[in-house]
Length: 362
Ligand SMILES: NC(=O)c1ccc[n+]([C@@H]2O[C@H](COP(=O)([O-])OP(=O)(O)OC[C@H]3O[C@@H](n4cnc5c(N)ncnc54)[C@H](O)[C@@H]3O)[C@@H](O)[C@H]2O)c1
Ligand SMILES: O=C(O)C(=O)C[C@]1(C(=O)O)C=C[C@@H](O)C=C1
View 1: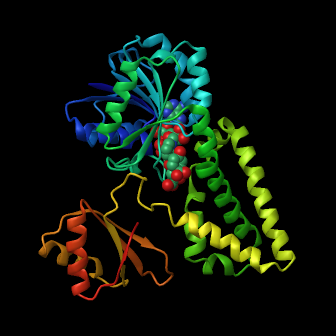
View 2: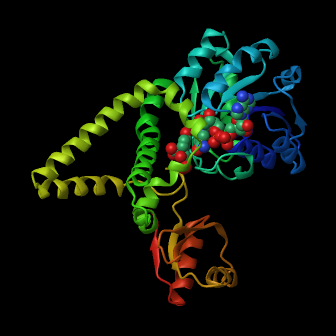
View 3: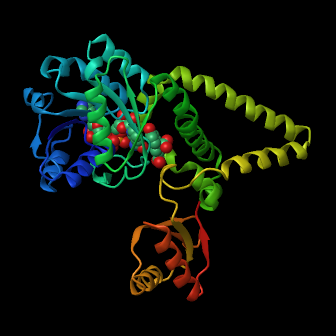
């Protein structure tokens, strides 16, 4: 199989690496403005052929992935129409889906297009942060058009499985409404909150110095790519305006409760939100394996290797391991994920035996 990429940053690079890992003989053609990054992607074995733009050889591709910012992706469709035959699947990874679908239909490309949106990512941008396993176990949202040929939809679903992700078909309008609330609004909130601190901190930077877990948890995504988010908000402006109004109404209600000293309302606010939030999975996607726990580790040399050694000696296979820093001391919670319930249980028994306190993740 041959795959073309326009844009090879965090998401494009992760998809290309995942496809290459699952199918080492596949050919990857790629273009992005940075020649240096393309050379790096060729040197690490991900890219086979560097393109200088939409070259005619894209017609060899079984699928072309548009992985640039959302409006940039749409701007490539006309050029692709002039190059590709009807046999090439066109897909994108953009965070909004109606605007590109409109352009696809306007250009008569609906039969060979399936919109895509992997529900995973990071505040980091660029090929250097891409990772073959970024999309593992996540929901990969798919928006076929009303004209998409069944074979193209099937091809897209097979590609998503090859990336170890889970296809989830949804119409573009429902998609845009949902992500406006669960993804786009949170990015606005995070950015506004960080800028509030920047604009109101004192000369000694008291707030910046003291900001701890709560602030950091809710603002990680404030460091996301400005160009990517500018284009997302431009493409999904109407849906975001609607949820922003709802959110501002909610804040106004909270303000009234505080002003009226209505602490019962504040209590109920957290009671209601906690009950709902506790039903969410904190794993990468709702379908992710649930075999994981967090273990507190002190910020001391060798702390992680002791845990790793205990698990290795017990012959327990670890799927994923990551540290979640949320204490100013530098200590953190080591999150360890396993492939199955047996391994998770065995690891629990082993670590409990050595006196480690574990917190099971849902
Ligand atoms: N970052 C996330 O968390 C995330 C998650 C899901 C989907 N997405 C979507 O994925 C897409 C890419 O985001 P990303 O996080 O990989 O960003 P990124 O900045 O890491 O990568 C963007 C890529 O597009 C390239 N690019 C920029 N302008 C271009 C142009 N004119 N022509 C060709 N290539 C160009 C860049 O060089 C880079 O390779 C966006 O549409 C975004 O909405 C992002
Ligand atoms: O984890 C993050 O850093 C993300 O922002 C990922 C995230 C999100 O969850 O909002 C961002 C944009 C996408 O379109 C999909 C996923």
